[in-house]
Amino acid sequence: MKGLISDLDILDGEELKKEEVQITKEEGNTGKKKLYIESYGCQMNFSDSEIVSSIMKEQGYTTTSSIEEADVTFLNTCSIREKAEQTVRNRLNHINGTKKKNPNMVVGVLGCMAERLKSKFLEEEKIVDLVVGPDAYRDLPNLLSEVETGQKAVNTFLSREETYADISPVRLNSNGVTAFISIMRGCDNMCSFCVVPFTRGRERSRDPYSIVKEAQDLFDRGFREVTLLGQNVDSYKWSAEQNNKARLEKSGVEEIINFANLLEMVAKVDPKLRVRFSTSHPKDITDEVLYTMKKYENICNYIHLPVQSGNSRILDMMNRTYDREWYIERVDKIKEILGDDCGISSDMITGFCTETEEEHKDTLSLMEYVKYDLSYMFFYSERPGTLAEKKYEDDIPLETKKRRLNEIIELQNQHSKENNAKAVGKEFEILIEGTSKKSDQQVFGRTSSNKVVVIDAANHKKGDYVKVKVNDSTTGTLFGTVIDN
Image 1: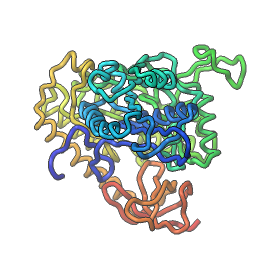
Image 2: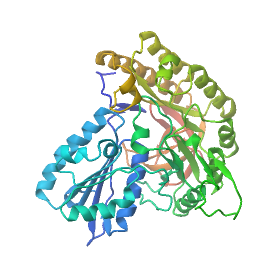
Image 3: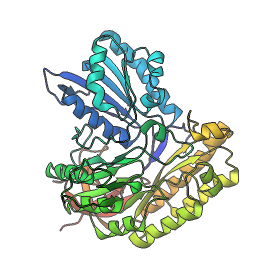
């Protein structure tokens, strides 16, 4: 591993890469107002940008991939780490040059950073015209009208009800094969390091029938995989009694639908529609969910199960509400029910307040026990307003954090390489997602357990299911040949 890495760096396969940014696609419609969105951070943000685009489309906007052409520019932001916010501020400085050339362009900041800083952001960033939190996107038309009169506009109201269930997202960054479906918003887990409960509000689950309808619509349009999104999907819970505005298919029937029930409902849309989900919380993932995964072949054999730390004292300080033993029991149960081929990935934070060297080694030993397929790894970055910022001193030296993070990354690289090597000689069914980045003569797809496989393009196209035999591997990629059916 060359050098040390910043708190924005994550490991995904073989590459260390910076925080992912997605940009709106060019719709190519002429004679309409142009909308440009940059989305930072998590999949939930990318999904939210699709909702924003749908709302703006109703106002006559079409998306563009060129900020120079934009009438309105939005940055959909992340507040999970300090560096993420600084990235947005630096980007605003760059956009300032574009706005000087196009002074009528409206610049807005959306999402978690907008919610955290609110009207203060307008004072600090003079080029920003509006600030909108994650629950206020329906108000965008009104806010833009305010801006047109020369005013600055802010709406960061957090809702206990908003799920955007009735909005059909514009699939901005879709490959036409895979898509995200948001099933819930907010988070009730008060992890001490996390700003999400303060920026996205309390948990509320979306009407399951609207989710199934969206999945069916995506399948009918040619999509072959959906990922059900939530900060903690396992706590999904919808009841007819609590949501009396919803219209159930079975009129008058009281029912409670949990995440396992929802998974089954979506899996039944069509056996050719793959179903994934993210993110699971170790305290909430149930055996019922695991048995539902086992029952339906089209529910992918993969679970993202963030551990954050392998030490029980640190987990308690993080307010994760489980300990090392509980987490290990859940991993053992996953392998018992779904088998050793079930892919497991994780999030890890090293250098949390007061973490000792022995406690850091507990994380390494847990990694050795689980042997994750991949992990997203960070060193601790104190966030204003969190419980940890109020209760604990961020007392681990930066150089120690970076050294520990490098040790975690090196071990994860080793495990990823070993796990992929075990796939050599085995057969899998993959769903083709697109052309390989390294050669237009090759395509790539993913196995049910989320491993990327590259094969010769031949006549294969996006959305095809192809049976392959793996004949080679690297840390992040498998290479295979097609098996004749």
